[in-house]
Length: 418
Image 1 (cartoon, rainbow, N blue to C red):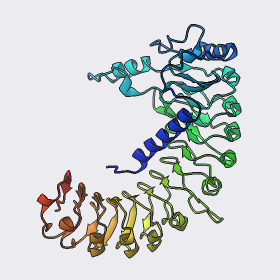
Image 2: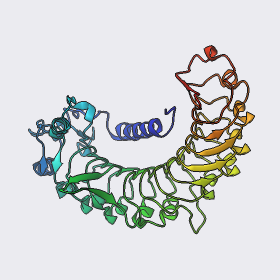
Image 3: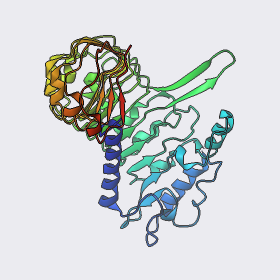
Image 4: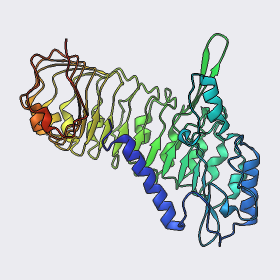
């Protein structure tokens, strides 16, 4: 359960960028532009060429006709100059009226029908004032991200997530020096073969191109294959404006840098679902501004270092499904603002420390599937904001004391044990 962490904070980040673009230059949403503003002939032709190379089986771009491209669906123009600032053409699965009736192939065919595909025409280079480009969730069938996108120097926001791009990320994206939001996550395509299925993934063999994106605040490369990017920590730490870094499931195997790390502005870090097979690296505990940290499913082992106490702004900590052991460190219980604590499916042992009772902001506790033996008295009565408690599959004896009825926000309580 997410209280205010990665998912909701990501939404907040997106809203921030939309508001920035909207109020800085125009006053319309992603519908039709101002009817009093007319786009230039050059920009109209650029959009028509872009449309020509797209596959649009459901005719989503039917409004792309007539003289004024500022009135076309998914296009937003500046209210004063008429220049095209936004192309907003994501596909959202919830938008299509597709229902699963037992046949996955029919279900897939339905939402495929509503996705854009084909190629991305370099005519976008003629949109000299384009700030926002969102093609996420579409079906580009394993083609590479066009390198010319790195020459759209006016871009502040680029979302190509979940659009089935594959191959190497073009290093030319490092030329987008004004970019603030970059999402390349979840780009992969399964090809069904006779004997096996092949997964085509977007990959980043070398991340040095990222170091030039000095204005970048949000970077999501989840599910991008970064197995060869051995210096990813050093590269990412050179980004002075970075607030959110999402690297979930990137085949990362190295997390211990050889140099000093300086993530001065990082608030959200997600490294989950990587196979590090080492102890939790110390540099993580130097990120004093972290609000959300997810290191679940990373094959980390050993104890949680007491350096966790340095993360005084932390509100969400996910470290479940690792091989962490020993007892919980005292420093963990100094994090008084923590809202979510997920430590399930590890090898923690001994009594659950009484210090847990001081974490009165907690709403979600996951300590199940460990080797804990006893609970502190008054767990439920002291932590009155709890919404979800998972303590099952430990070595706990006795029953939970405290009035469950007083927990007016409690949604889920699981404390069963053998």
